[in-house]
Image 1 (tube, helix red, strand yellow):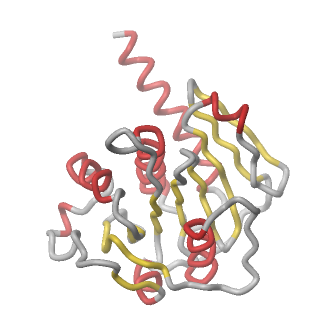
Image 2: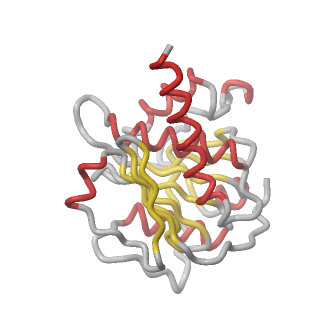
Length: 215
């Protein structure tokens, strides 16, 4: 009974923390962002086959993201029923964890359905500045978020999850608190920190950014 209560409390508090991220984008589908970030945190924490892996999710403006990307391999998500491609479906989440070992991004529409996987993001927006130490996956996420208005959620191989919108880094999530001692934040604005058990969420204190991302 106590473990169940504690798990529910943890989930509620985590979602309250993620709300700070969602408030940055006025069109943000709150429940879908929650589910996507939670999956990203699980991938960052668990890795696969005993190793850390990196991946990228885009949320919203799916058609625009597809226009700014191309397939790296035959899409393993294509032609599956739409009902089987909802990010909150436990069966799909297990599949996405496996597919995260492949190169490329997952593209989600703003209702949380995965429309494509293993996409190479061609977007190269101008005036994108990311901190030293962040690689091509972060640059691609920042760039596509600038060009399309989508939210980009990047899982790094260093087990940190970063959220970009409008070309800016809005949040950094550390799935293990011990990482704080060896992690330098890349957020440039005044930062707010929330902790719950072993999870730390750092969000920019900048003003919310209006956007009209397409479904």
